[in-house]
Structure formats: structure tokens, C-alpha cells
Image (tube, rainbow, N blue to C red):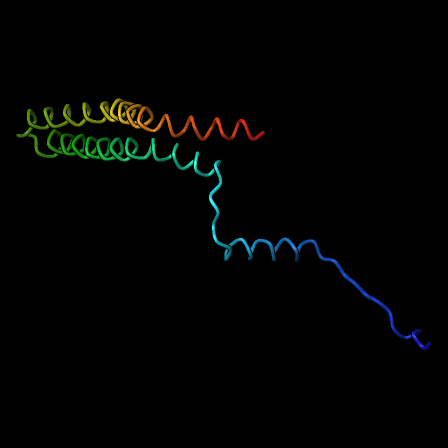
Length: 125
């Protein structure tokens, strides 16, 4: 037996294994577990209200800016500028109540699904 020159060599790289796992995650089919479903439902409840509130708030700020322009630049449009500015302020102030109303309605609509998923998650542990 002339095995003196043969030997076994093994090197382990933790970083390399993590990188391989990260690459595999990118290409593996996504499996949706209950926690990700719950997070998606929660986002789905808030997104429409957030979009509506942003649109209303941005339009209000544009109206406020237009009103200020009417007041400061075109002095003969002072009354119109004040009216446009007040409408802009009112719409900016209405953005948050619109968000809360829309979000509450969506949460009421999605509550049974969210409660079912959360109960399943709680019973798993």
C-alpha cells in the first residue's frame, strides 16, 4: 500500500455557502407562506388610502401655491388668490381624514381574511 502521497483535503467557506444560498433564493420559485400573505393583506388595506391622501395633499399644496402667486405676484387678483389658497389649505387638511376613512373601510373588508391567517399563524407556534 503506497497511499502515503494521497490525502483528503476539504476547505469550508461559510461566506461562499451564504452566497450560494442567496443566489439560489433568487432563482427558486417563490413560495408564499402565511406571514407574507398577512403582510400583503395589511399593505393592501393601507395602499388605496395612502394614494388618495397623497393626491389630495399634493393638489392642495399646488392650489395653495397658486393662491400665493395670485396674492404676491398679481396684486389685482388678491381676492381670488385668498379663495384659492383657502381651498388649497382645506384640501391639504382633508388628506389625513380621507386616508383614515379609506383605510378603516379597507381594514373592515379585509378583517376576516387577516384574522383567519393570524389565527392559523398563532396556532402553528
